[in-house]
Image (cartoon, rainbow, N blue to C red; front, top):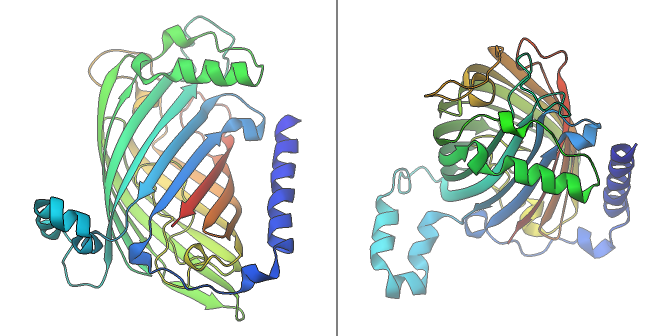
Length: 355
């Protein structure tokens, strides 16, 4: 099947990179400090990787994380042209809290698409989930050190026809020569969205296996409040690898998900050493609202009976080299609504750059 060939080819490329990189990649370079690093990451998630086209069927996100906010006070350009901005940054919450943590601003923008199981039917399917598209932009404040990260995020967006879900899916299906979904006339209506997120992650366990290999554990918990999602979540991740990053693991596209920036000078994303790791994890959510199942907030629209508890179970691998990060994650998501016959499999691919 095409998705199997794609995964196999991706695995071969990354394995070859990990095993046959030139020897100089092992030589540690002078690393920039984590507080001076920017990180940009592109994510793509698609059930194409599992050979299906249903439920949470496609999403992409571009995120960027700034260097430490206090470092901007040293920028000559800002000192000369925007001293008011320096004063504003110094008064921002948590920035000068005396804890020794770095503070960063994160930005993300993306699009998500949801469809029923039967995408060849034009009529409304009462026992299947609604069609929905979602476009959004998020602004986050991070407070972190090598072992702890708190993320406070605000998101604005749009669900419904104006979010462009039909256009994005039709364009992708045209590109891969696949039929177009027939039922987009039944999608949920336009609705502006607003959401607030707090996520807390820790890295309390780091075990050195030898000079280069290590394993760690990264528990997390948090909450989301808004008209798209309202839930509380808890989970964790285990990693083992060579030159393990000092970040907070791998994240899927979700509120508060910008966590992959380095937290210490020996991070391979900063030293440019070759590093690779394997990971597995889970995230469980107690859900009060999911607009993609509950339908619109202020008007009647198609909906299904959502399940209050949903979990993601996932595993995958990452490679870090020359400031680049490549990650593939395979995800199993439990049933999200009562009418759903089975859980869902999908893949998540990301590529990032720290500089």
